[in-house]
Image 1 (cartoon, one colour):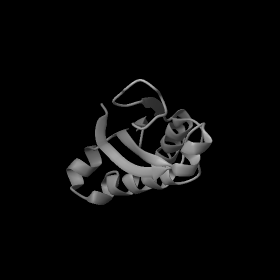
Image 2 (image 1 turned 60 degrees about the horizontal axis):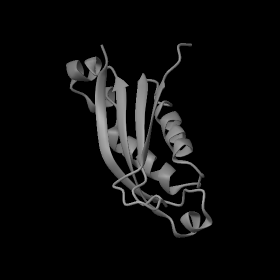
Image 3 (image 1 turned 90 degrees about the vertical axis):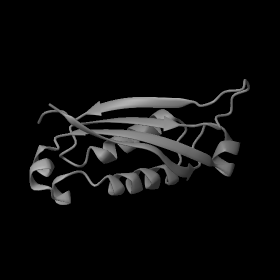
Length: 122
């Protein structure tokens, strides 16, 4: 069985996009994360050290979004997933990057990309 921690709507300002004006002006991005792990040890110990530090995860996500620019939110999603999977307790992660100010003509509410990455057995 797998347990889940979800973080929704992490906000950070980044300079990602294919167009020069996106990179120059930047925009706000929103990120949703689902961390799949076992909460059994933390549930028994009631010790924060035995679970995933979701505050630290949020800080790391914001730093990646605010960091080096990329063309695609697919690339940004992948970078975030790789960083989260560095914590060996995370079995899988689902990352959704929202780009609500994407440069498209028709009126729209949101553009997002969701990726799922699992830890490969070693």
